[in-house]
Picture 1 (spheres, each protein chain N blue to C red):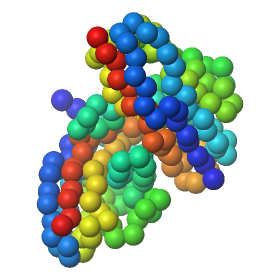
Picture 2 (cartoon, chains in turn brown, cyan; picture 1 turned 180 degrees about the horizontal axis):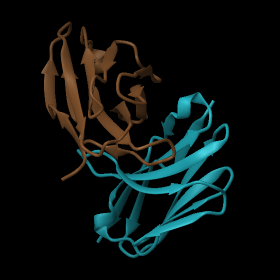
Picture 3 (cartoon, each protein chain N blue to C red; picture 1 turned 180 degrees about the vertical axis):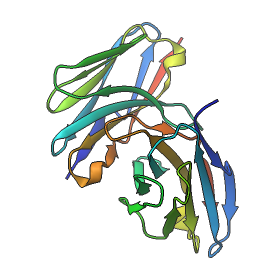
Picture 4 (cartoon, rainbow over the protein chains, first blue to last red; picture 1 turned 90 degrees about the vertical axis):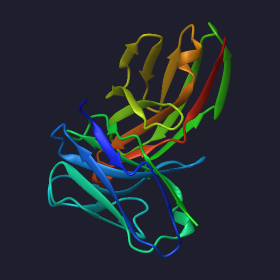
Length: 112
Length: 111
């Protein structure tokens, strides 16, 4: 089925470890986003991309890096994980501005 | 600064008891207002986009309306399967077209 696929679905990290979250979409969407969702705070934008090779900072970018080397993939990296990065991470894409997002199923990350 | 506030935080209904969820927003030039449904452990699922005041969209038991300051999601004769968190989001013409989400309303429908 067409959509947004996130891997992994669950991960536990120790403080200071690094990891990469992968997002892949097969809808040929130009725009891709990484959000984090925490209880009572709603979805907050980490980084986004408006096309292959482009990235930009969102609302809460500190501690994260991203890359969009291919149009269909958007990678989110944590260089040195901290307990404050414990959250559920969602990737989303859309064909253009003004359209609704298609979300992935999320990655539940725990940093201990 | 663009802002979205949803109320109530939680709503408990009996099956068949109609009600409305509220989304109040402030934005510098509305490009679109979006409603999503989110089930536990899953990503949000897109429901509607509203672009201008006075616009309405319907899908099964759900109807979304829009004014210049708020949007309502009306739920008519809800069923237990309508239980979910409903998210509202807005996109303005400034700020790089970023979308701002509200914290959501958790809806519980009891049979």
